[in-house]
Length: 312
Image 1 (cartoon, helix red, strand yellow):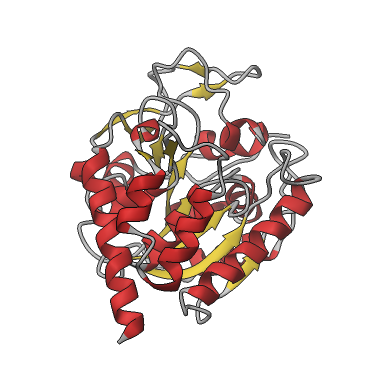
Image 2 (image 1 turned 90 degrees about the vertical axis):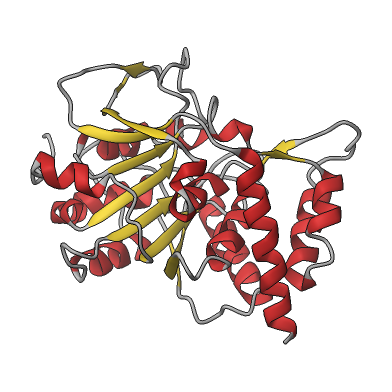
């Protein structure tokens, strides 16, 4: 059985794929415990109230050496979200547990609080004020919500860190390949999609312990927590940098000039995780570069403002 989706008029799709140019409502879907970059993205979103209103956080599943399976990864991400929002003094923002498993097929969703809440929030949105869904992990929760209620593609814009640059020889990337069925739902459904590729784009977002120590560590409890998180990610920081991938999706909403992009046909996804170009497909927006210094300068300043505000 093949899932069926509403067909957006191309004029509306192109409009939705433009930067909104105003403050937007958003939810953030994150595998928060999987890496150290999710923590920075959560704080960056919370520190950008002039650009976005964070309505909810969703815990996404992940499975690697930090979890015993997708369910454990999701629960650890949920608990990490609780920790970060507590340190930031933002317990007012609701948190929802996401999927405990990946999609069993491209037309079968997985039940979760997060997916149900996304459907509810999306269906309460208007054509003039779509809900922005920032996704920085496996796209399972978002795909499940689309399969539960396909009409939400008319009321949301997905901004996803997933896959590699469309010119990359493969797209065997963690967020995308964990749940190929979910990735295909998002690429095939026609939902307005802004793609932040990893290798070739977000891979520019490198920082070092010395930079985090100089500009983040002394910025209150949240700065100290981010510093410790970065410090503990490696036993040897000599000539070492790490990519903070996930802040890319927040950066595009803050200033699209930092994340140049183009409209292009949505690629198909092969079974061995390669992009298949098909010019007959609907349009998505794909970033092709990111201005690293502008993004980190903005992030560090906002962490400082959050610290000053909390102190005073």
